[in-house]
Each structure stands twice: as structure tokens, then as C-alpha cells.
Figure 1 (cartoon, rainbow, N blue to C red):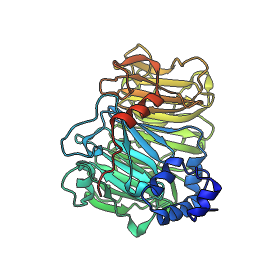
Figure 2 (tube, rainbow, N blue to C red; figure 1 turned 180 degrees about the horizontal axis):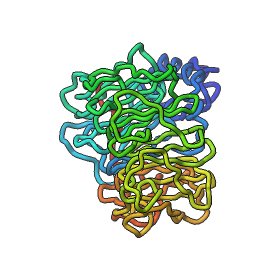
Figure 3 (cartoon, rainbow, N blue to C red; figure 1 turned 90 degrees about the vertical axis):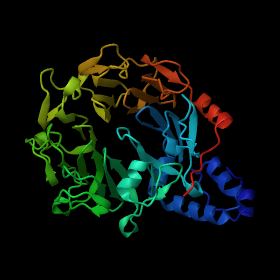
Figure 4 (tube, one colour; figure 1 turned 30 degrees about the vertical axis):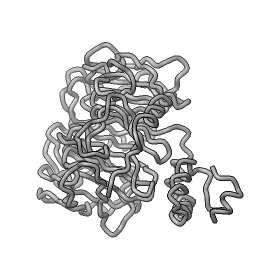
Length: 438
């Protein structure tokens, strides 16, 4: 961080928050863009989301199909099979196994979130910046949004947001995108044949359209499965729309819904977080209990060995009645993180992504953890699992054929440490920072 004299010389005295990393400061100063840095500092100082991110003790982790992402206070790194469109070349070369790639937005704007579609054939991602602007990567996303880009190559595509609203969260399924604005309004676009955009008709939408919410409720969280959408209001109510053939909307029937419909919650529990994936929905209540609906194939919901689907939110039995603080789910697998740092898993486990030998876990099973590790965060990909503990140590297990677990030669069935320092050192040594063109 700049000292007082350096800040004064640059005209930044009193403007530079302590939370801004040295990397961010240097990136502006080396380009001589002092005016942009002043403006950015003013924004950071008054922006509650930046303050929240800056206070995080640990980094944030995300998982993709065969890759992983690490968000370190605004700077994003990816390792594993990073898609072509993250690379600044026209060769169609994917990143090497385990190689760490740095992903930087135009003007070095810190990144707040990456939403990575793991099921799309061509792959696509949407990155949300700390200032609420949103950028699309990849051919599938560009086609959906009709942004005029012919190929996925190395271009960022800024997404036009209605009324210039600031986006606070992005979620998408195989072919639809949902965005939540700061003021609680919601927008969607893309494929809509199952009603997953919640606009009352089944026509596809190529631009972001407002989604009407019952009673005008304001939304605080959105989640998407393959073809369904789940929303959580600020009052703790849950709404859903879209495909419902497995009962994933939790409304007591198996009929698709083209408009948002209220999801009945057992015992009138107030819901804190919603998670959706493939053809399932998982609801985390404020008291730490968890409910699931939709497909229970391979024991994906951990509720009953004989139950294939459930159309109502069903209580998921938690071992030792632990209180849950985070849910992660993908590809018929599910991981629950308890408040005391223990982790449970259930569902498909063919690649040992749950850190246990059995190919499927019909009920929640505790995942063995390294000694003295209290897990703070989990992220699950198609065939691999990431965990980060209280000391920012990263662990992984499952399929590592494409390097989603870093510089480890084979997939592992037990959690093993991933050396973040080595990953970042290799990124600096072997890979130039990617600065895709707009």
C-alpha cells in the first residue's frame, strides 16, 4: 500500500481505503491512470459490497466443469481446463493441466463473482464486477444475448442492463440467464420453452426482461437449475418457475410453471439461502435445517433410499443434527457445510469427488477432513470438490484429469492439500496476465 507521502503526491490522500490491494493500486499507477484510481477509491469507500468483500478473511472459491476459480479480493484466477475464451489468442488452445491463469476485467475493475455454466457444450461464463457491471464470455452467452460478437475468442462482451441498474448477483442454467439488481428487481433472458424466465409466455428472450414477482416482493437471492429458476424474497418467501418434471419447484405437483409461484415451506420456516442445480432445489432455513425437492437420483438429496423424486420441500436428515451454513450441489452430488466446520456429502460419487470410496452415498455422510482443519467454504464441480479452511488452506478431491485440483497428477479419493502459492507462482512464471479485448 502507498505510504502517506506517496498518496499525497498522487492526490489520493484520504481517498485510498486500506482494503484496496497493492496490486490494484500498482495496476493504475503503472498506466498513469490516476483519475481512474481516484474515482475507483471514492466508489470503494462508499460501496457496501466492496467493504464486505474486503473484510473477508479468506478467498472465495468457485468450481466449473473441469476447472476451478479462486477470487482473491477482486482478482480472479482459474486453473484446470480453462475454456478457450479466457485465453488471449486465436489458437483454440486450452490451458495446460494445473496451470493457473489470471483473468482481468477492462480497466482492472475488481471482480466480485464468476458464474460459470458447466453443462453448455461450448461453455460460457458471466463475470460481475464490483461496480455492478456485467461481462459475458463465450459463444453460448453471446448468442443468447445477441451482443453482436461472432466468436467466443478473447473478447469481453459488456451486457447492457435495463435502466443501468447495478447487478448484485448472476445465475444461469443451461440456456437461460437470471440477474438480480441491487434494488431487488430481477431480469432474465435466453431459452424459455419451460417457462424458466417466469414471464408468463414460452417465447425465448434475447435481451434482459423484467420478471414479475408476486405481490411486488423484492428479491434478495436467485438460483437456477438446468431449466428452472428459484428466488428468495427479502421476507424469506420462496418462488419458483420453469421445468418441474422432477418436482424441483417444490409446489406439490410435476407441472411446469411459466410464472413465479409460491413454494410452501414446512412449518413456515424462514429460508435464508436457496440453491438450485440440475433438477433439484435445496433450501437452507435460518435455523440451519435443510429442505430439498426434485430428483433424488443416486441419493442426490440424501432423504430416502427408495424415493426417486419429491415434489414438496422435504427435510434432509443431518447427522448429529448439525446446523448447516452452506450448501453446494452439482451433477447429482451435494455437499453441506456445518457451522462447526464439518462437511457432509451425498449423491453421485463415481469420481470420488466426495472424498469417500463408495460410488454413491444415499444419505449424508461425513467427509474426512485433514487434522485441525475447520472448513469455511466449499465448492463442487462436475467431478471434483474444493474446500478452504480457516487458514486459507485449499483442499481438493475427485477427478483431476484436466488439472481442476492444480498441480496434482491424478484424481484422488481423499482430500489433499492444493498449494496456492505454487499455483500463483506458476501463473506468474509461465502465463502472462490475460487482458481480453472489449
